[in-house]
Figure 1 (cartoon, rainbow, N blue to C red):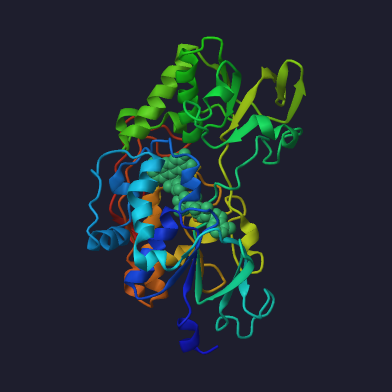
Figure 2 (cartoon, rainbow, N blue to C red; figure 1 turned 90 degrees about the vertical axis):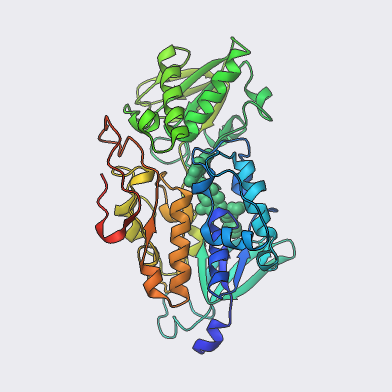
Length: 437
Ligand SMILES: Cc1cc2nc3c(=O)[nH]c(=O)nc-3n(C[C@H](O)[C@H](O)[C@H](O)COP(=O)(O)OP(=O)(O)OC[C@H]3O[C@@H](n4cnc5c(N)ncnc54)[C@H](O)[C@@H]3O)c2cc1C
């Protein structure tokens, strides 16, 4: 295919979550045509699973600038920038109006689950003519399997659909699959739609991130109306500094408060705390589920909330030449910038198309997916990623390379070091001179 023919094709954007829709807005600004393929029956299908969850970053960090320009051009009035939206409010108040704009709606295909990406007529092994061949994106749709050609692919499919299992070794614990009916992932709405499921039960929450924290606090609230309820918190490690967070020093006060409230709950003794608990197997008997660790057992659990994070679905790119970090499963060059052993959300260095590139020219994973298994992704980071990628696809390398990021810092910079005071902020830094933490 000639260069002109290739550039007449759309840029496939996989996933209509916040980052995918932002990518579409940036592409439109650059005169490139997006084709947005979304697996869900509505946009933001992953966010829609936790509409009740209040985000810890305020509106100002949760909206993309190109998307805002598009919305404002259509007379949209934005929210109060310092307020904290729930996931549902982000969907209804920002993403839905964005997706409804004709320029986006005309190019959005719902219920199109992408199952594979390749190059038209060229398998992974063949090099000759590779870069000139269009991408071929295969999707499962209500009308059957369909294929789309694209000049480039921006993969913003997130990680929520592939949660990590309970097993400490990264594999499902023995017996986990058979007990799936008693295991919820992510952040179930324990004070709303899922109330009856948890009321009066002995509930185990596994994980040490913000999702675990939010669920524990909600369950503790539910426990107030039902003193028979019992709550167990199992963590793989013994250092909870990261989830307790920066407290008063956190650049995102809501996140700091979440950590402080969790610490108070732990200290109140209303919670059975099981640190350094490495889940190996689950066995059910008349008295409930016994959760076996390496050298201990949590007995008689009724329900389990597995909040152990998520991982990317790498099967989509099996036929592409991709290079991932061996353990984070992030884009390879990104790994040292986001390594959760070293970085919190706010200390991630600005990065753009170069760090997001793969050997397969024209394919970029962005958003939460680009971070692989690293849990420290923030929307603001994803918006800068897609600004840079869209500029690169439009051939504007000067803008693509000028990556800048304004992130809220946290008082806890990494998992090894607990900083007593707010760390010097690394906000508004350029890639070349950023040295955080
Ligand atoms: C509970 C929780 C709270 C969070 N709070 C904050 C916060 O306060 N601030 C912040 O900055 N970040 C927060 N994050 C992190 C992050 O910003 C969100 O996870 C965000 O939703 C990531 O956006 P995304 O567009 O990359 O992916 P997603 O929102 O996961 O969107 C991916 C989209 O792709 C679609 N999709 C998936 N697979 C396919 C496929 N095969 N084909 C087509 N479409 C597909 C999905 O249906 C979905 O619509 C939070 C995360 C969680 C889990």
